[in-house]
Image (tube, rainbow, N blue to C red):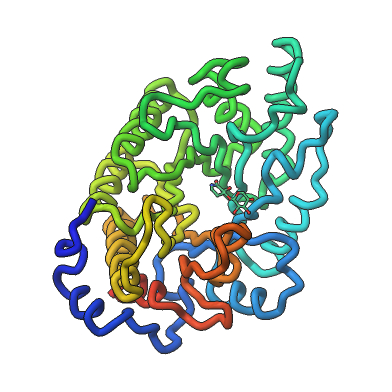
Length: 347
Ligand code: XIL
């Protein structure tokens, strides 16, 4: 945990003393500022919101369906597939000239019920079929997929245990999903995606060991997705350290779900607003600089998990209230101080 002194060192001390770092005047669209696609997530319910649509079309050139390409949205209880919602997302991306990133084929938290009680061969057959049919449907439209989402145990002690790993094997269910997806769309860039990789170094290291294991086994894995739901209280250097380690594999790297909450769920939070914003700016700066320090061909995309603060999943849960400011634009579509941190880091 950084001390107050370390967090407020250097130029951020100034920002913290003066209150929150100020929001920048409107700048050029993000998609013109970064040397790779800039992504945003969204749901079909937002497509009719003109403010959201205009902001998204102006600033971003890659789209991740926040929910509607997940198994939960596609797989019916009888394991037949319903593509209506996923298609709406693919159509939205196409209409707006945005690159489509598919999220997510296999996730520990989904699919347990439709797959419950199946004999082993039916389980394996329908697992393969799901991955194959979903990937094949969006061949030529989705340039990439999160093939397996969140495989690593939170404490970094190995992998999670769940219905997929129990039936098909801890590593084998992952290899199998990548193999089938690759066969269904040989051009798709296939990602292993997880969270807390920068926040929890032990988990980050376990994730990278898994990447190494998969690569050594000849798995067609092409990219590392780091969700980057940043804990703004982590020590300086932790984010840079993860990126340096991750870059060594030579795979593409996707900052796949960036947000940086100003709230702390670990303790009573009496920090002044200016201090929280300074911490947010410092960590987002470090993330952006770490991403920009990657070789050109390893920067896949820089994706934020929501366009405006009011769109964030962190503000959707009634218990959380709605006051968090974890994103690059405020409710009116104006750039936030966090936007300023990204833009300043690009210079
Ligand atoms: C979240 C969405 O934002 C929510 O709307 C949904 O209810 C649950 O999932 N990691 C992921 C994302 O890979 O799919 C999650 O998205 C956030 C954490």
